Image 1: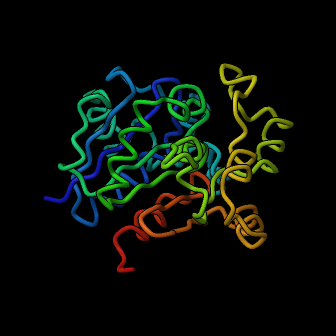
Image 2: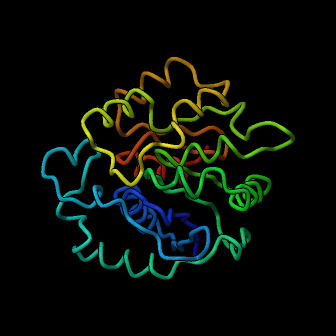
Length: 235
């Protein structure tokens, strides 16, 4: 069976950014394992599991069918509770690594040197590297030959414009404030390929995902399906 490893924050991950790509990978016949920085239990952002019938369609909250109490939600939680440490990830066992987002990833994932080393191993072996939303900032801090891994890559992630908006409307859990990193700003700083087209689409299209070689990134919670589909499609 084909295998994928997810890295999930112990500080606070976004539920939809895990459950949707998890379901999509299963649909394509992949087995998914989960990992955290220390091997501890990942923690979900409490705002991301609130059932919101309308605004879940744009990435805030979740639908009832994908809630933590749903059948697939219970299945996912069982697997998350068995997360392994990044120290024991063997990239030979996986076709790709998926970095789940959420504001918590800004605290425990994006500047973690051990995680950077794991990502580089996948990159050097030409395996798929995927990130969604705030986790894209992790890739910006991975260095290869003295420069950022994404320097010459087209990438997307949660845009600064939307970060300001959700801050204004108090849609970020207080435990993540103040934000240590602004994802959009870091992507703009480290990637030379983030042209105006990417910056426009990531604001207008909540499903937006970009593939550049073996690196695939998605703008936010609604992009999970597209990230998986871009991985499985032929280049």
